[in-house]
Image: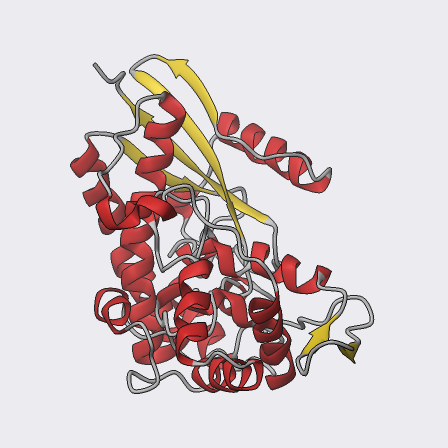
Amino acid sequence: MNNFSIVGFFTRSLPFTISFTLSLTLLLGSCNSGDGSIEESENSDRLIVKNYDRAIQLLNEKCFACHSNKVPHDNLLAPPMIAVKKHYLKKYPTKEDFVKNFVSFVDHPSVEKALMKKAVEKKGLMPAQGTKIEDLEAIAEYLFEAEIEKPEWWGNRHAMHKKEPKTPEEIGLNYALSTKKALGKQLMKSIAKGGPSYAVEFCNVQALPITDSMSNHFNASIKRVSDRPRNPNNSANSIELEVIEKYKGLLASKEEIQPVVKEEEGGTRFYYPIKTNGMCLKCHGNAFSNINSKTLAKIDALYPEDKARGYGENQIRGIWSILFEEQK
């Protein structure tokens, strides 16, 4: 939407003509919230969908991994949700047309149907997700009706100057998100080209080299590690295991998750969690119910010691572990 598929971190995508990479994250699972009831507004000819809790949950767990309103502009994997909504509203101002075309694109993405052509050129066309039509309709209805939060940089997006990270937290997060973006772009192209099984081959050959190239670019040591690695080279050490357990506890108690920064010999160590989303489950979920037989056979062939399956959505699958020297 690898030793552990980047979509996993990233999560954070949807039908928008934003068509691309991780757009896919959004589209998996039910979107009905509460009783999912729909009623006619007395003062409008539009349908009003009640109880949006489920849709909001899906946006947080799936869409915002790629279409985030919290990520700096230059680290985005895909346009923020507000941009997706803006383009659909401009082209399809009525709810009926908005929902119809939103669903049509996500169900069967194509360049012809894409509204954000430049984004498709840069990010690639998102692959079909196989999401139920009624789920896509519920998501589209929410996007049409609700206020979508804008990124901090939104008002200045046409005259943007890249803000250089200064604090250790900002520096580490920039390294993590930039590497995630590099991996995500290539991973999504692989999924679009040959499906999840082809993406497994990509990760097996290219994930570590791409990560290493980003380490060289930033003059830092960038790793993705896990307590349940697919590739043994991604095994967490004892300290990293403690950090993973800490993040699992924070997630379980619904506490705010922040980067962990520690000074150690050689520089500053940065940790940040990698969470699963619906797209991750195509390679890291349960056999057959999430992972199809072709993909499962490829994983078994390439990773005989695989431990990175059996996850559900919104779980900690590992962490970024990044070491860099103090910035002058």
